[in-house]
Image 1 (cartoon, rainbow, N blue to C red):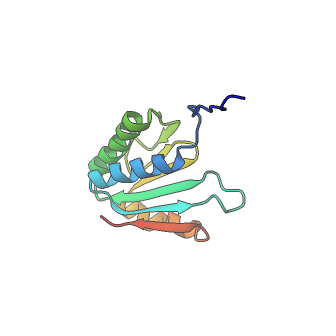
Image 2: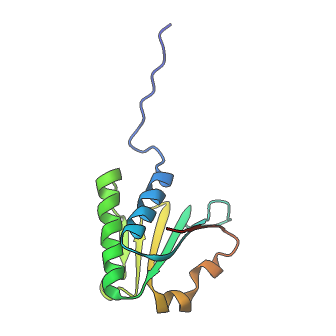
Image 3: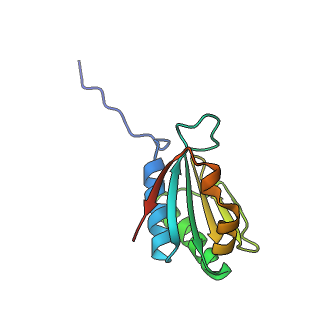
Length: 128
């Protein structure tokens, strides 16, 4: 009997790669307070990971968002499923299915305190 060869399908889970590329893209544009929340062990979670960061201006928030989309498309050939908040750039959300990315202006992040809403999730902080 011959060897069984399995090919890696295009649908292979690349959540960790997506997480790493997004964090690198944030750091490249000097995002602040970058964290990820692993929601996979929480009941009724809407995705596997949230990645959250902030910046001090709408221009920087937009630049971070654009860089994340560009890098993920370039390196992983993944397009964002949905995006919200592009118009005013107070809080931009990029939805990649299992990974949802939140890019806040600092004032909005301090107000909404999203990580506190998901306090049971495993938190990873990224320090440059």
